[in-house]
Picture 1 (cartoon, rainbow, N blue to C red):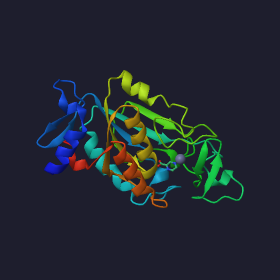
Picture 2 (cartoon, helix red, strand yellow; picture 1 turned 180 degrees about the horizontal axis):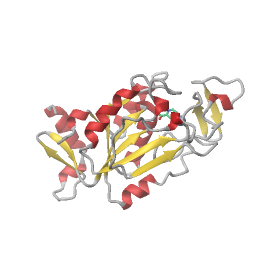
Picture 3 (tube, helix red, strand yellow; picture 1 turned 90 degrees about the vertical axis):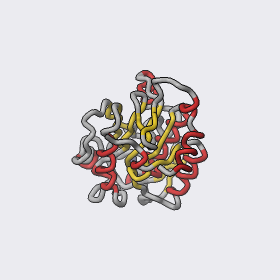
Amino acid sequence: MPTALRRRLLLQSAAFTVAGVCLPTAWAAGKIKPGERAALIVVDVQNCFVPGGTLPVAQGDEVVPVINRIATAFENVVVTQDWHTQGHASFASSHAGKKPFETAKLSYGPQVLWPDHCVQGTDDAALHKDLKVPQAQVILRKGFHQHVDSYSAFEEADRKTSTGLAGYLKQRGIRAVFVTGLATDFCVAWTALDARRLGFETYVVEDACRAIDLNGSLAAAWKNMAAKGVKRIQSSDIEVA
Ligand code: VGL
Ligand code: ZN
């Protein structure tokens, strides 16, 4: 890792100002070494979001080998699945006269409308067949309330309903999360921002994510994440045995 990046991460991280054995991350040969208090979050690596799926993210399948490689460095892994009902409120087809990628006003505010995608129990909603995270402890499904979307793995789009993930991670003593998957500017960014807000040391592994990039959403997401203290790293910054 370049010295400047390392210095910036050190400055950003309160974890390095105290000595102790239970830090969520440590350093080895200039790389970040996730410890027992760190978790990898694999967001929505599902058939729907890779080429051939219903809401394909360009090069979405390229995250799979990157995630498989870094996952070996993690004792704790959480996998998420976007898991919508048929006729879900986030689908353009549920709103007369609306087309995918337009916006509608729902009870909790503006909502981007998507093609029908990730319907519960379909092959489209299944995890990518090549994803290899056998040690994953939780598969967290989200977006299952008919009238509320959930980009974040922590909190639904009404910004009231919790998924329970923060409680789970906190009760297990997890203090740092490394977010990967699809899509950088939607479910990854919302998950990372919520993780940070809820008190986790939060990293987004850029090359383990791919973006939708709708009307500048990718640049906006990175700007927002930087402003909130989410750390942007590459998979090569992580020590993998
Ligand atoms: C996502 C749009 C709609 C995502 C999910 O996983 O980023 N994006 N549903
Ligand atoms: Zn969705």
